[in-house]
Image (cartoon, rainbow, N blue to C red; front, side):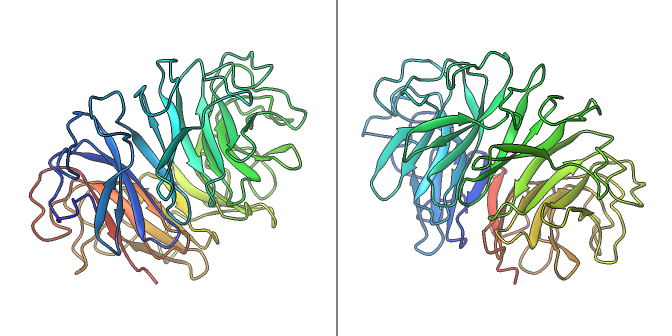
Length: 403
């Protein structure tokens, strides 16, 4: 996917990708200067590849000059229809009156051709610290992001990293990493938000011990904030509500907020967890159950780490990284792979492979999944997944349709 409109492979590295709901549009960040004409800023940019028309465009730039002030960006997130792309950038010329000299969060409307800044207070004050770890709702209205800024909402005095939500329609910014009583997290950071399709639910990681009652494990947990009901509950618990006995992080959420996937080093979330490595779990908030999904089709637990889950809209499909060699047959590359768990069928398959089934000859990273679960994008430096991959760089690949 990380090629020019003419099909020329990028002359530099790519980092992470995001994919639209139907898999048509893939957003990615890259240092390559040959993906579009006139890219001379010498910096990382955000691009969108239309897989149907095979056109690649740069969306982290405005105007005609390319002096680094009005271009550059990274870490894209994309709305369901591919119209809106959120990204972070330290470039001060992307919008007027950007004077904070910080990394900010921007949203590009690819239809209207406009770029706006999203990490502002409800009164329009720019953040007094940098922003990162962002995600976007399916319709592009809501942005959840992480920032150390203390001036985005009133009463932010904890001096830690918080999770915020920006409503682009009402231009209101609220803090999500708070307790059900509205108390801010103390002493520890909150990060890595994931937002439901309509923006109601925000899952996030936090080591704060005062967001829910009885949090005494002294580790990071995954929480979910119901922005409508203004409640916060802990997700990283067992079927009997036992708190995790190990760090838990990196949540992903289904469209309706019912399912939350996460990574945890805890061995007490499900019975029979004896591998002593991080695994991927899914919490069904309606049923109150927690299951481990980083297992093989036969149910065998991974012998080494699994992490970084991403989830389809329905929650049926979960893609994640694993270095375990026993989750799929014939895994002999001794590298991180991208695998997909079909929670309904109970099957685990590897997608970081070529069309003919050849496994990647180096690690695959940073998975993303389309809303329908048919397409998975990932980053890898592997040179054997497609013909004529000779750039000796990390590229973005798409595997699918899976079903």
